[in-house]
Image (cartoon, rainbow, N blue to C red; front, top):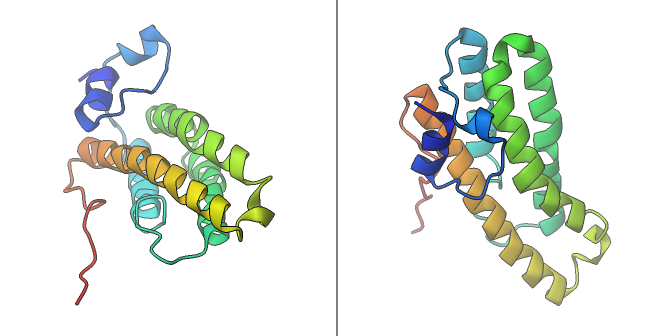
Length: 156
């Protein structure tokens, strides 16, 4: 399957990558790629990156999203160059989806106690979460596992 088809399948249509890269046949063909994808999938589905913030603290949510950079770097370093297919996806998502959000809100983090900023932050967070959920779905598809990133918690 072409990477473009995988991106389209989960609705990641706003991602910009070079044509040669997006048209290439793609799969997680080795253990390093698969292990890296699994590790990232677990991180994504257990963070505010894919889960509702509810009444949670915006600063903590921002820090959780920011940690994805260090987590991704750690995964890539530990798996090495054998995880290049995973790296191609992870780096694009971080740089095009997560980085614009964290770059905007880090300088404003001290103002995240003001109601108007909290409202803006939460609205923009939902947009980022939507894209990150699609990233998690992409990883689940590539791992050929059931995607549980959309599982909602039960409320009494």
